[in-house]
Amino acid sequence: MKKKLLVALACTALIPALAQARDTTHFLNFNKVVEEATNAGRLDGSVKFYLGHAPRGASIVHKGATTSKKTNAFGKSDQVACNWVLQSALITLQNSAKAAGANAVVNLVSNYNHQEYKSSENYECHAGAIMAGVALKGDYAKMR
Image (spheres, rainbow, N blue to C red):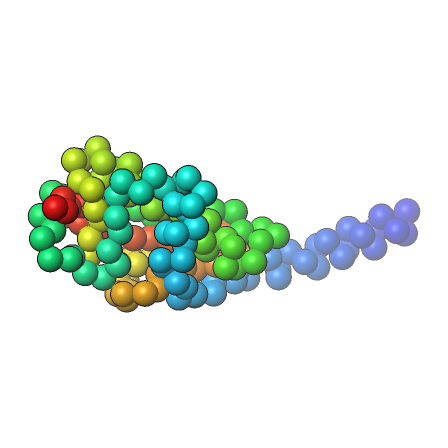
């Protein structure tokens, strides 16, 4: 009986720690994740992603495409969880771009909590003890 009471007290003591959610911001390499997702077959390579700019010759098909994804981060390193959730966001953008007749997503920026982070190399991810999230905004385009 005493053991059960001690276990219950220990679990109750952990509740405040869980309530104070961690929210760590990471700026991680974008192209590494695109390459990993393409090599794994999660991205099919038919849509190219251009972080922070539109290459010469891009013809915008649809402006202001957005996606916001979350994933389970429990038991994963922040980097693993962030890479996984970015892949999920990219799959969504790939499928929507193809449906719009586009073969590229250009001017791509991180847009977490509607705060833009623009980089030519990195994306922004927020990781906590339980969830990780990525939000992206860009334009669908046709490339020659």
